[in-house]
Image 1 (cartoon, protein in one colour):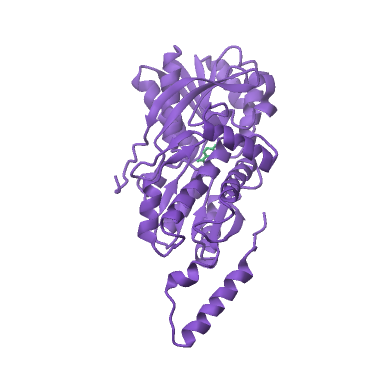
Image 2 (cartoon, rainbow, N blue to C red):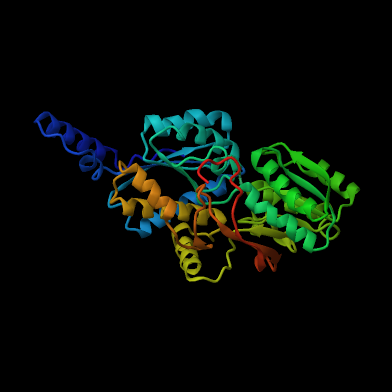
Length: 399
Ligand code: PHB
């Protein structure tokens, strides 16, 4: 996706004006210039490949929230600079630096992919920019690499899958196979599932890592059929999730081995999965059907703005903008008041479509995880799998 250069000339004119004033012997406060320049939002998300829809929905959710606030953040116009992450960690240093050092963005919003997130965090920690992660669940982001200027509006990988192991035990399963994309996200999720599952007496009989972003599942599904576990835990998302659930049913496994996972397995892809998804049980911090005023309003607005149904990714983007809006309102749009801005963001709480939004000391949401089951082509909430779950934030020196 190409960059949006909307307000660039406006900014240059202000900077030139400031220089002229300074040359005349009057040095305006930094805020006096910055207050009128647009807030620069760098967006680093995937816009092609298996996570394309995730990136698109996060972006649409973010922009919807800013538009609802009158198109301004902290009283200032907004300039978006969008870069396609391509879901490739090796490209992340260059892409992040381009936004942070090249464009000098005030906020960097992204990414989707945990591997990209770790690269971004390493760079951002030492820079005068605030990172808001609207998806990637890498534990380190709000764990060993936590920092005052790093925030997350989504989840940690651990949070999404620890409750799933508990649910599978409650459902009476004792032997399970896990199958996941073999990179940071999938590895952390299957470990979190195994943690609660084995602590309660379950046994993980086989862990199957699939190279990311491959969608060639057949050989692995044949192996699962031979192993005959009680249940399967899976992490796939986007295009991969759409396909694996269909392949699972086509392999004849659906009626024999119940399928579980974090909610990404069915999120935003039920239309593509059709009948194959019926009965799949997942744990997630959001569901379309949550009956609260913020969710009802959000879903209607998203549908009007984007022309499609919202999902968890859209919510996470929407909340990333809410977090920035709250922080910037508290400092009157002055990004130079960095400590106050960070303090305001950390302490903010608002009604998210998922429920009340609250951050931990490590800047990761503390939230309820719902148990959902696909019935009649949609997810139905069966209850709360784990209430007010906080990530352990292992290694974070802010907790
Ligand atoms: C991640 O890489 O952290 C990730 C990607 C897609 C998801 C969830 C987590 O749906």
